[in-house]
Image (cartoon, rainbow, N blue to C red; front, top):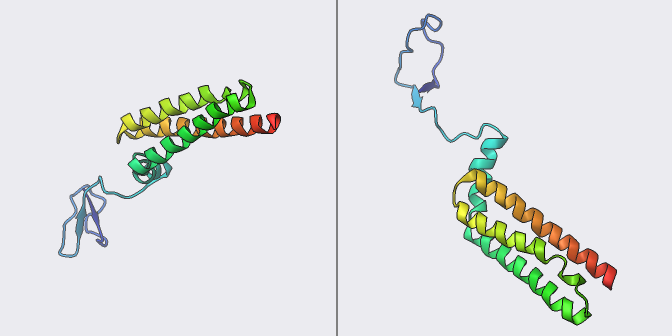
Length: 134
């Protein structure tokens, strides 16, 4: 435990325990201060990554991208629009792993990063194929 709000104490350097007065606040060591980028990530960003709304939005986005690839293949009479499907499949797998991670921060951050990377790479592939086929 640490003592905050106290001024200089008598015997501060001799190893004696500090004497508490009426104005001192005793604060436990495990308080909720953010002390670095890792604490910022684990305490502020990670709880938002496990939200149901983010899961539903990403599921909808991946579903629409997959549907666009599946519909574009027979419309263009080519299999080239199906090239992003394995990347989007990995995105669905990463989304499932994000859902399973729950509140465990390390797997949640890892799978969310992979999910966003797969989604962006899938969007890039769709745009490149749309530009080259168009």
